Length: 607
Ligand SMILES: Nc1ncnc2c1ncn2[C@@H]1O[C@H](COP(=O)(O)OP(=O)(O)OP(=O)(O)O)[C@@H](O)[C@H]1O
Ligand SMILES: O=P(O)(O)OC[C@H]1O[C@H](OP(=O)(O)OP(=O)(O)O)[C@H](O)[C@@H]1O
Ligand SMILES: O=C(O)c1cccnc1
Ligand SMILES: [Mg+2]
Image 1 (cartoon, rainbow, N blue to C red):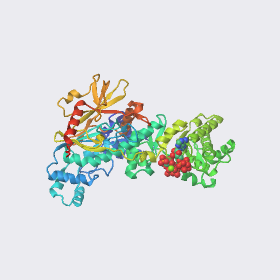
Image 2: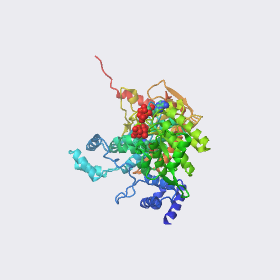
Image 3: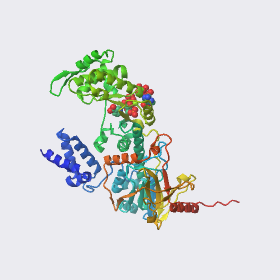
Image 4: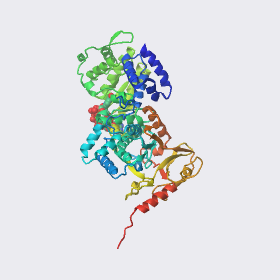
């Protein structure tokens, strides 16, 4: 009864949009977790959506519980903290401190130079974990002991200084997580004392690079799969270790997947969970006697022999050559999940055994009031096999006047990737669900996104890093980005404007006013845009020691991502030869960049 009352109260709250951040205030995290346990225990007395929402709420509010830091938001991944960095960040920090440069105000940009997978767009992901990391940034006594060990020449005074260091003097600007982003536009701008900005470098890159790569990979696979089909992430077993796996599940969901096979990702992030069964389940049966109990109760409690029923349909349909042990395995699974059977049909012969056996069990289930769900194809020509399978579903459905047979789900797996899915679309197929493992989670097509983190201003003066490759030259100074939209609602160009300019306000693009947009390095490439909508891309997400935004739930970020992708012109998104999106700078920034560039290049003398 008590559970019921709390449940009703929560149902009411979940209907209020702001619930997630309020849950903590209202009930306290401890109470919330207790509640989840109770609801889990109550086994069915509670709406499962509420349980899922509750789990998501706990994730969003993932906080410390010990006395000292109680209630403080912490990173989702336990490895994330100030020691997840390269040694040189700490030695540089020590040197900055020794040379009294540690407090100098500085500005760093985090951005990438080229979209991955030969594409022209990227999905920005990982911001929540960045905010959690920055918010939680502090060195424990144990961390300081490790630093003392690694850098024995460290002054104790420096370690004391580190012991008191936190993010209270840092301001973090970011593009919204889930946004579609383009090269050179800073995803993050970090402002604060040089020492902190420098200490953040490796961790921020680590948190953004893989997250954005996987989210982009998922978005690309999603585009290939199409809106009306289901895309599942099945990659846990092939992922880059446990952390890679958890990140891959989270960011695959953010960018495009509808669900995962990863149980911990369900528990921890509330990602919808899906699964079928393995070949070993089928091959573990060799004869019908191994089914110790072939019976099943219908909804009225009447007992039926499911195996016998399935065998009768096998005779009736003339499927007499199918492998019986496979049918037995399907019956065994169906007894356990009478409304959830997705049979793996390729163990022996997909069309000559697996699909017919499935149909026999589906008919048997139907006879006693249950409905099978579908099949999974895990080898062979997925185009041909899915079409042939659908044909068999239709034929048997028609014979028995069962309309839903034609709509049985066909799940496909087996080394799927973007090119294979595109090829399948071209050939035609009857697949409803694409289950993608290795290629999705390991980002096999490109293993890293090259995000970099560069100093762009120190003590108020812009800084430039030169390179023989123009593309690698940094854009100096504090900059903010605007996205300019055309009449058809698509973004046309992103433009960076310098915030250092005295007339900075005047340079902010306005709807209906012509804006000159210049390519940063190629003078002849320029365009005048009259935007129909102007979107400011950077927002403060952390300041004065705390986050300045309510963290959106994973679901909200995902919805935002899908909405953003739907606004991008199709030719920027397409797989083959996509049109580059224009990323530009103002005339003022162009002049600053090129003057600084000239000043910074030494003039060689020749004799
Ligand atoms: N119609 C198709 N067009 C293009 N690629 C396909 C098509 N059907 C399947 N594929 C892909 O071809 C590859 C087939 O791989 P492989 O030859 O290793 O598997 P298989 O022989 O079908 O299965 P297994 O070795 O598990 O029995 C997979 O990557 C699969 O996704
Ligand atoms: O192919 P992926 O995209 O990585 O998807 C996941 C794969 O993992 C499972 O089997 P596994 O590959 O372990 O064995 P199998 O190929 O021999 O069935 C499953 O049957 C898929 O084939
Ligand atoms: O549920 C499945 O079918 C599954 C899950 C992970 C990997 N391969 C298959
Ligand atoms: Mg495989």
